[in-house]
Amino acid sequence: MTILTAVLITAAAASVPQPIDKPDWIRSADYPPWDRETLEGVVEVKLLVDATGMTTGCGVTISSGNVKLDEYTCSLLMKRARFEPARGLHGKRVPGEVIQAVHWEVQRDQIGNQASIVRYNVERSGELSNCTVENHGADKEAFSCNEPLVHRITEFALGQPLERFDSVGLTLLARENGAVSEVISVPQEIAPAGAEKHVLSSALVETAANGKVVRCETISSGEGTGKALDMCSVGGPFEPVTRQFTADGREHKLIVEFSVFGVPR
Image 1: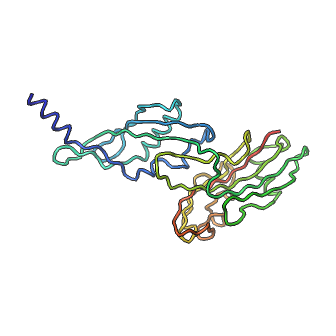
Image 2: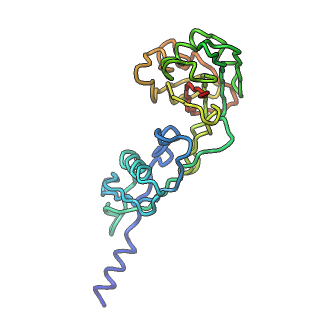
Image 3: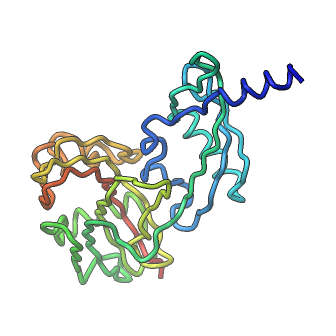
């Protein structure tokens, strides 16, 4: 009886590891790259935390139903999840474990905070025609009807010949990256249903309260696309201080994505 009582007291005295910078563990930009349109689910995991607060193990307790998504979630948490370690008797740091859940969800019928799209019809000859530019929420249009540029980029990304497509286009999408909950969302693609889409470049952009870009960190610039498609490079569209978003008196963190799409005939 005495031994049992001692064990119960010890268990009650131990605390649970407390998360540090939890919103940064999984970000909007982490949405699984292999299936951005349909892959959804809740992954619940048990994280093992050592006495220094480092994550040393991750096991799935409730599967999303997709092994790849489960493993991907664990890999992200193993790299980023940090804790204030659990405390045992007399406040001594001890190993512990904690349950965490991540909800991966595609947000339907949204196009993000700002978006610009340039579209062309493709003639049977492969020539581009009937250019249209759409602007959603941006201060000014990010694109103009520059046929040679669009032709070069779409041919590079979508492959030749372009005449296999009914229409092609480029999109520039900026969406808020300030995650307040554990729901990680990405907007539904702006490109029409059934379109073939490739992300050419993406970046994390931070703006000051006056709308000025103060920081730009490249997430991806695309294999073989060259420095011209690195949005944060000198002379790039989001080179710090050069670009400005709508000023609303608040600082913002945005994920900016530059993509190309083609709608097959």
